[in-house]
Image (tube, rainbow, N blue to C red; front, side, top):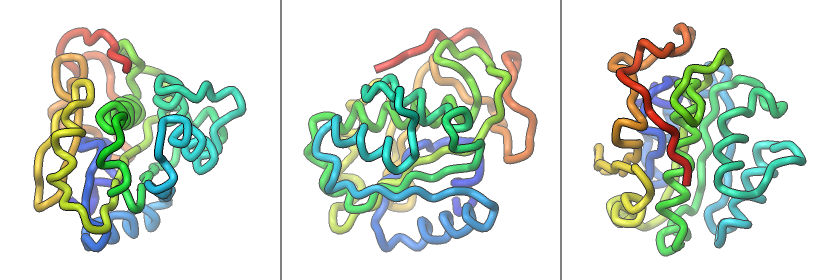
Length: 207
């Protein structure tokens, strides 16, 4: 799973312990391939307004960022057009234990999954292919003391979020016909996904 951060495939969000060697190996590989690792502090994300500010500052969102969940999806997906370039990116949230009891946690993870699904596959909110470069985008929540499994109920409450335990880590992706993934997801350097790679139309779903 070390190569996960440089591949355009799910899971889109992983919750793991801070000392998990897999996360260090994955971020090192991403940097070695020219990717970007952005770090946030979960203790500084007590409410949605703080989430929007932290992401805007850390990822240099444009001034017109709307500071709402839909706008967060858009700016994460379209960083190539917001001065960030089409670099593979991993966003790490340290001290993510602080988010366990946040009433917006399920929605937050759903939004991150939606942004990653669109960025990795380069599909718009209606599931249609875009003539834009793809880039790997994933999110990693790192815990100090809390077992990742403790996050499962809250994370699974997010819209269309499916969770699973994998090697002691909690993974989150999107489920349902709105969020299909090609059976053989593209690897870095592969051609962007086209409409015929997916089976059937998928109306967009937004929080």
